[in-house]
Image (cartoon, rainbow, N blue to C red):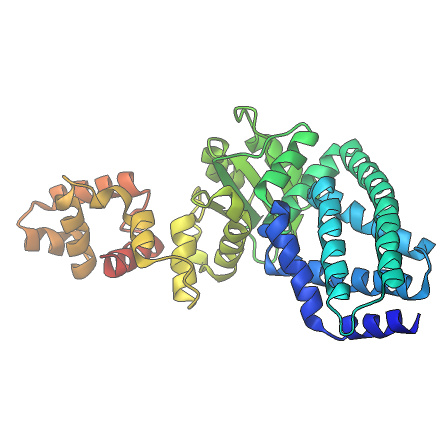
Length: 387
């Protein structure tokens, strides 16, 4: 037993052992390969605890305690909630056990044959118990989540916007178990009270907003949750087109992001939330939501650029940079430089009505009125920084 305890102390004191376990798990179990830093921190903590417990069982020739079993069952329930497949979780433990036995065998001096056999017996017995207990807990947690479909869908969106998921595939499977399908392409809408002193959006109000906006989506399931005082909705892209009208009718204002991929919903949420935090009051024109372009400009002005100048230019200027529309881009640039339609018309040798027609055409193509102070600013920034 003294030799086993010596090796246990040696391995526990070496942080490289846990790092080796986590690296092996990520290399051999695809569901763990795409985990973000926050989830990897959790994996490292679980790996360190499991390594300590398993080596203790070996060193003391003992078995899992009821407290150990409860903790492993809790881990399984958490994985059911975040959609990581139970097969992947159990495989991760098998990989970790293999690395542990390799590290024990590489200890100096290595264990004798009886101790090595005891380690193998303990690992097999423990993994057998874990497989049964964790699979049972995973199934039970999954059944509980499915039974309350509304709550489960809210939790799914909470995990999406917080980045708490192993992969989009896992979340897609989780949505399918709930009888749903994640919207793709999507519109992420974050809405709040238009009154600066107004109360936050309640879950009931968020549900009503979802009902008004979550119409036919080709089988895709709209989702809604509440984060602080704001409602967050994940809608099929087509449903998002009615958002400005519906949001305005309910005394709300918001930001709608539609240009991010499904694996970047957390990025889209952060962009929208930061935009609502930073946007001046005059940016919230009645009947209009802040969009990807507004959010990216606000991030740039706040010193937190989230994309390239080229992408900001595409988001704001859009069709104006296409061939055949040079005259519209020239009209916009001259209007921004001179500050008035009459002055711009004189510089370009146009009748003022012709210049105003071009400004209306620019507004139609970009959904941005150059005469509106906030939208004029976004257009000016885009034409300045875009190549």
